[in-house]
Every structure is written in C-alpha cells, then in structure tokens.
Amino acid sequence: MNQLTEFLGAKVEAQREYFRSGATLSRKFRIEQLRRLEEALKDWERPLCEALWQDLHKSYEEAVMTELSIVRGEIRDQIRHLRRWMRPKRVGSPLKMFPSTTRLYTQPLGTALIIAPWNYPVQLLLNPLVGAISAGCTAILKTSPYVPRVSQVLVQMVGSAFDERYVMAIDGHREVNTALLEQHFDLIFFTGSPALGRRVMEAAARNLTPVVLELGGKSPVVVSERADVRVAARRIAWGKTLNAGQTCIAPDYLVIHTSLKEEFVAEYRKALEMLHGKDCSQSPHYGRMVSTKAYERVSGYLAGGKVLVGGGLKPEERYIEPTLLEVTNPEEAVMQEEIFGPVLPVLTYEKSEEVVEFITSRPHPLALYFFGPKREGKRLLRQTLSGGACINDTIMHIVNQKAPFGGVGHSGMGRYHGKESFLAFSHQRTVVSTTTLIDLPLRYMPYKLFPFIKRIL
Image (cartoon, rainbow, N blue to C red; front, top):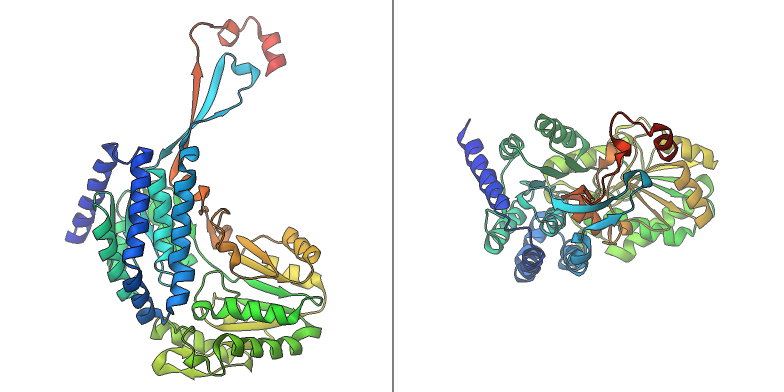
C-alpha cells in the first residue's frame, strides 16, 4: 500500500469513527451544518466566481445563476423539510400481520465519496453534499483537476467550514481518484462521463458499495413542423451556448422538420447575436473550452458536416464559435460521442415516426427536448425514455429542486435534488413492531388452521 492510499485510508477511517460516534445523527446538527455551508458560500462567493472566470471564462452572472444559486436553493429546501423527512413513517400492514404495525425509519448510509466533474465544479460537488449532510452522512469530496483554481478555492472553503473528520475536500489527478476508489465507502456519488462511470462502478462492486451515477450522453432536441421557430431557436441557442456547451444536459443534436430548416438557421443566427453580440468571442457571457485537448476534440467535429452558422476558431483562446453543423451521415463521429461543446449537429426528418425510431435506436439520453404543440411533445415522451425532458424549453428541468434529477441506463442511475437528495444518502429501514399481549397461533407449526390462513394470505 503506497503512501497516498495509506493517507486517504486514514482519512476515511477517521470519518467512519466520527460517524459511529453518532455526532451527525440529530436534526439540530444537520441543520447547523447546512447553515454553515450556506454561510461559507456567501463568504467565498467572490473567490469562487473569480476562479470560475479564470478556469472556464464563466461570467459572474452565470456563475451565480448556474452554480451558487442552485446550491443555495437546495440548502434552503432541505432545511425547510428536514424535520418531516426524518420523521418515521407509518405504513399499512395487511391482516395477515395482525397484531403488528410497520414503520419506515430513514437512516444515514455512513461515509460517502462525492466525485465532481469540471463543467459545473461548484454546483455538482456541493449539491450532492447538501444531500449527504441532510441525511446525516460524513463525506469526502473529490474536486476536478481540470479546473485547478476552482478546486483550490473549494478545498480551502470546505476546510474552513468543516472538521475534516466530517467533511473533507481533496484535489488531485487520477492517482487520487484511484486511491480513493480503493477505499471502502458506504456510497459513491459520481458525476462525469459514462466511460468513467463504468470504472467507478467496477471499483464499487469490489465492496458492494451502492452508487449514484450522473452521466451524460447525446441529448436530442426535436423541432416539429408546428413549432414556434423563433422561440425554439432562442431557447436552443441559450441552452447550447451556456458554459460554451459544456453542460451534460445541453442539446447535443437537433432533429428538425425539413420544412423549417432554413428558417431555423436564420433565427438561430439572430438568437446568437441577441445573446452574445455580433462577435461571440467578445461576449463576457460566452465561455471557452476547458482545455486544449477539449478544444481539439470539439473543433475536429467540424469536418463531419457542412457549417451552416458559425465555425470560427481561435486556438490560442480555446474559443469555438457557436456552430450549426448540417450532418447527412449519422455515423459521423459528431453523432457518436457526446459533444460537450458549442457545436450542434442538424438532421432533418419528414415523418414523426422517423424521429422516434432514431432516438430509441440509441442509448437513453440524460435529457430530451421537444419544440411544438404540447400534445405532440407528450406523445414523443411516451414513446421514448430519457433521464429528464422539457417541452418547448431546454435545461430548465434541472432548476427545480423539488423535482428529481437523474439519468437512466447509459445516462446514469439514481437521482437527487430535494427529497431525493436526502434519500440518495439514506437507507429506509422497515421495522415491524408486534405486541406481546396477543400471540395468535395461526403462523405456528403444525399449521392446524391452514385452510383459514390460506384464505387471508
């Protein structure tokens, strides 16, 4: 066992001991820690926003809207409802269990590992932490090395707010991830790519550790022939250029009715100018690729189709202009991998059956977007499966902390936000309580009353 593994093993064991002490179990303690996290977000808002700008070119406004405000909303929701969620819940018992009663007790799983990605490094690290705190767990947080300034600030913020026996943040590269996954946790919460999700699941299987995997995939956006093209173009352009397309639920490819393609291209161009001005590279609200490797990968997709809008590149800035890319061959690389950038492939269709067949022939996406009459959208959703969906919008289903968020199949497993965050880090324990004042002979051998028992089973 190397030094890093020994070091992390000691930290995990210290958290296990702290959890076993019972310190995290009371509602008062959990609420105090949630308020402490909320206060830390307030105190560290400026350093976090500055770091997000340096690493991702994310504006202050966007950082607050897509990172900090979502975590704050989650904290307040958990504080508001925690008393009710923690209360034992009585459930009905059938006649065959008389005179027993049944209750569900919600208990923390123990020590959790939370691994965050780089695209929303604050929200996707701290939002799961809110669930861990409200459930009564301890947690080790692993930040992303691809946003080094944000990671550094997060480690400092968490270190200043919490005892490391309770919550601890660690930065570092793959060797840290590998060493962490060698430890025995009670839950692993991972957000990232499906490829890395498989590795996490393999590591978790060695200890039979439960996992929550928030992955990604190719999220389609469908524009029907009766859609409001102007609104569709604006909302799709917003969803696709948010964080320069580096969003797990960003529209990944567009399927539009043939009759609307030319109109949509014109409206998309107008929408981009409205959002980011005539030159997106000068917009304070348009981000950059996180790394040279990401820039090279995404810019390489431009060779897989005909550029309809955009296509401008600045390698020295890792800048890729928002691009509509007409694709005629769905086997192109741009249609095989999650893009995670501002390039939007465009395919056309004639009949709605073609859309359903195309979407269902591919792995289940994390999100599905439809623009057109609500009735048509609901029909498409009945015929397909995705983690979440919007009708006549993009992205916004992640904003409501009262509704669960998560993937399905290739795009993930498990869900969180609101009560689902509390439950994700909890075990619901069924407890049957039976009085000793009555002891019916029905269940005992040699089953003399079996004919009667059979009738009530």
